Amino acid sequence: MSSAQEQWIESHPYLRNVADFQQSVTEVFLGLAPRPISAPDWKLVFESYGDGAPLLESAGLGVACSSAAGELLLAGNAELLKHTLPDPVMASAGSLLEYLGASEKNPTTAIEWVRNGGPECAPAPTAGLLRVLAWAAIRRTLSTVLKSYAELRKDDDWLRGYCPVCGALPPLAQVLHDSPRMLACCYCRSTWHFRRIGCPFCENDDQDQLSVFTIEQEPLFRLDTCRECNGYLKTYLGDSDLELHLSDWSSLHLDVLAREHKLERKGASLFEI
Image (tube, rainbow, N blue to C red; front, side, top):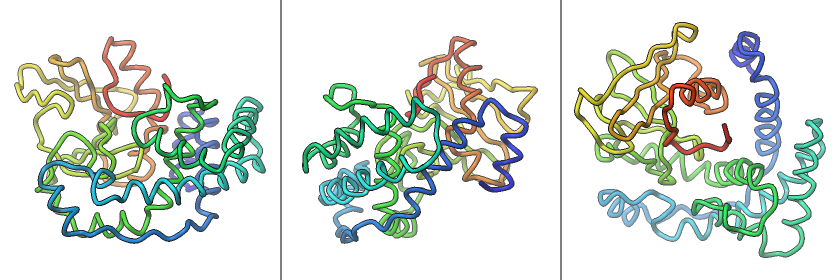
C-alpha cells in the first residue's frame, strides 16, 4: 500500500477493511499473467468511436476479452483465497470458486454477465465479489489494449457522459482551474474529458439546476449535484495521487453523506452503500 493510501486510511479509519481488500485484489491480479489478446482493428474502433460506441462494444474485442478474462478470473479467485481476509469475504470467495470451477463455460459466462451489466439476473452466487474480481480480471486482460487506446483516442472527440471503454456512468470527476473537467470510471478505471458545466447523467446544462455541495471536513472533495435528475458526482479538486482519489472505494463515505442529503447515486459502483 502506498504512503498516500496509508495516510488516507489513517485519517479515514473506517475505510481500512475495504482498503485492505482492494489491496489484496490488486496484488492478486498484478501477480497473474493474462493470456495475450490481439489488438482490435483501430480503424473500425474509431469509426464507431465517433458514433459514441465504447471500445468493448466494437470490433469483437468484448468476445476475445471475455474468454481470456474468464481464465484470469478463475485463477485470481483461487489466489485470493490464499490471503487473510474477513470470514464473510473468504466464504464468498470459496462459494464463487466452486461455481466458477463447476463448468468450463462458467468463467466466461460470468465475465459476460458483469461486462453487460449483470449479474443481478444471473444464477451466480456472491454477485458483489464477482463484480469486483471480474472487473479486475478485465482490466488486467486489457491492460495493453487500454494503454494503446488511451494514446490513440482524442478526448475532445468524446465529451460524453459515459465511459469510452466500457460505457459505464462515472461516479467521480476531477476539476482543476486550468484543465478540462475529467470524469472517471470505477469499472475499467478509464478517465475522459467532459464539459465544465453540465450533468453527465441527464445532460442538463441549466446552471440554475446545477449546484456545488462543499464538505468542510473534506476540502479536497465536493459534490457536484443536479436538481434535474437528483444525481451527484464526487469531485476531486486536487492534482496528486489520482489512482487513490479517483478510486471509488476511497470516497465511499461521501456516498453516505450524499444519501443523507437525499441525493441519488447515478454513477456505476462496485459497492453497495
